[in-house]
Structures are given as structure tokens and as C-alpha cells.
Image 1 (cartoon, rainbow, N blue to C red):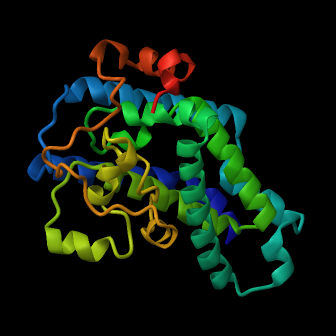
Image 2 (cartoon, rainbow, N blue to C red):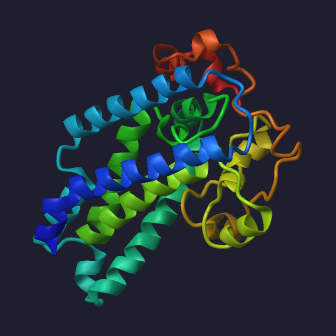
Length: 271
């Protein structure tokens, strides 16, 4: 199984990424949830440019990736799961759930700890949301996130297959729940009992502070409900709500170089 994971990791991840990206991009054209307020071409240049930049930086500092860390830990018998001796498929299931919970906690921490918020707020400077918004993260946040993921994988002894499944899911649902797609209300209500839907996550990108400090889940919606950070709808409604941050509205400072400098400016302290 490990040889299959290592031999096919790149193909699986790229195939899933481009497949989901194409589906969401077409869905946004056919059935958009909101009219866009900014130039799609400009925003895609910034967001996709960050995708390539972050991918290169992560490969430079973490050449083996999280799957490689899992294989390294497994070869040495490290981690909690290596000591417990559960069935392989139960290990995979529990690992995916635990990784999702860690991502929820990490996301909340990046909102409530001032130093981490400086890095994360760049993600919230997008004045529209679409399939590319899920890639709008500062390189320093991506490096720190990968370090947290490495530590989690090694400490828990998470199997390589579980890491691959989780990373594919995370990329897919990030594109899905940031996408500007219309889903009928009754379907959305059913889906969000299990997963984070675009309408649920859009609340998190509201310019209203109490709204963007809610709905931290990326994949499963359970954690927000259990821990009291769930907010069902935006106060102003999905069509009228304002996205982004109140103190970052000028298009002149939202180019790729401008947003890379956001964490180091004085206004980054503001919520």
C-alpha cells in the first residue's frame, strides 16, 4: 500500500485538483451564487499566482511532503497509532477525523492569536469568493501549517494513506466551500449537517467581525456545532453581505506584492 501511495501521490493529487477545479469553475459560470464585484481576471492572477508560489516554497522546505513524513514515522514505529495496534482501516478513518479536527483548531488559533492573525488575514482580503479563493494564503502561514501537519502526523503515527486521503479531501472541499455556486436551500441544509457548504463558509468571510470569527471548519461541519462557533447565516443575507476586511478595500493594495506585505503593515493589527 505504501508503495502505491508514494508511486501515485502526485498523479492522484493533481488529478483530483484539476478535476474539482474544472467542475467548480464551470458551475460558477452556469449557476453563480452572487455577482462578482471585482475583476475575475485580476483576482485569478493573484490567487493562482499564490498557488504556484506556495507550492514551490513548500517543496523547497518540505520536499517529502506530509505523506513522506508519515512514511518516515511508520518506518521507525513512531506515533500513537503504532503503539495501539488498531485495524488499518480504522486507523485511516480515525486519522482523517483527527486531522480535520486539528485543522479546525489551527484555523481558530489563526483568528484569535494576534501574531497568527497577521499571517491569516491575507486570506480574508479577497473581496469576492470563488474557486480560487481557497488558495489565497500567505507563504509563511503555509509553512507554519505544514510544520503543524508534520508534527501531528509524526506524533500520532498517522498512516500515509490517511494523509493522502485527507490532503485530497482538504484541497477538494476548500475549492468547493469557497466556490461561488448556487445550491438549493434544502440541499444546503442537508449537506451542512455533515460538511461545510459554500453558504456556511461564506459567513466566515463576512466583513463583520463576529461573523468572520465563526465557522472555522474546512471539511466537517461538526466541530463548529460542537464547540459553539457555528453561525448559520450572515446578518445581511448572502446577496447583500460584504466580503473581505473593512481596512483592506483598495484594489491598489490587493495585488500579489501588496497582499504579501499585508502581515507586516500597521493595519494588520486591526480586526
